[in-house]
Length: 124
Image 1 (cartoon, rainbow, N blue to C red):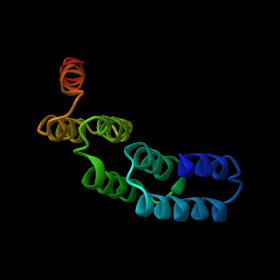
Image 2: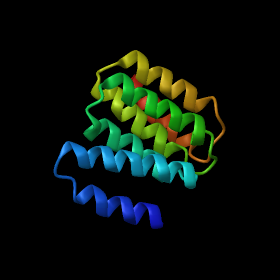
Image 3: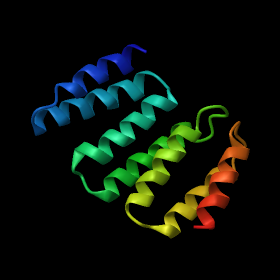
Image 4: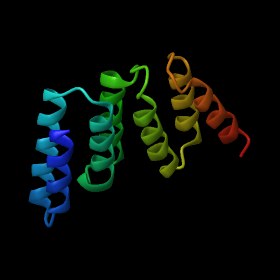
């Protein structure tokens, strides 16, 4: 919880690009120090929304998160859902479908919910 609170405070104080780099460095330190699905999800979302490093860099960050916590039984869905939201924003149906398939190939506590989301998404 320390890292989440600290990062929340720092993110509120962002005023310039230098501060964004500082927060990115803090996230890197935090994820190296503490394994947390929610911390990874927040990091990925921060990169997506603030880093300005381009879509590929954001995708790479999400892939690192999936590698680190994508098979967490009870909470991995948080990262998968954020990754799909990113793919949806890029309007990449192929990528969203592949993400659903990857997530559904891993046993997790929200399997029924994930399948339901996938079916709903496919029927759009």
